[in-house]
Image (tube, rainbow, N blue to C red; front, side, top):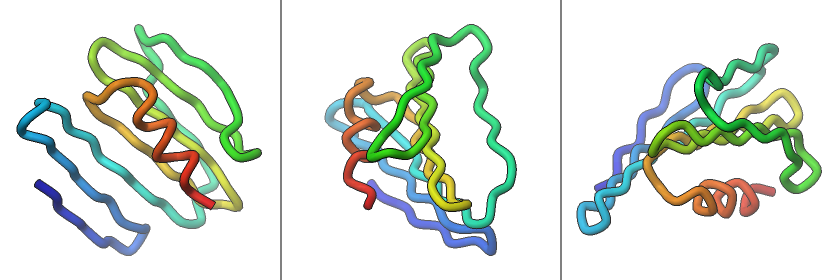
Length: 93
């Protein structure tokens, strides 16, 4: 299942795989000045993806990755294996 929502600030896509019971949301924000990621009780890694600052958080069965690039932010949040959101972010140019 797939849903796409466009807003003034950007857009988000919801994806759900019934067979694997996995779901994630992909968000895109423009002109963001601040970065906020819920890291409480999670394992957090600061890293670079394609030369862009990124934060990866594993919290229970959820994975969150936030990447900033040129006043834009890309965020993946979901119950998918840790390497999947990394692959999504690596595809962004």
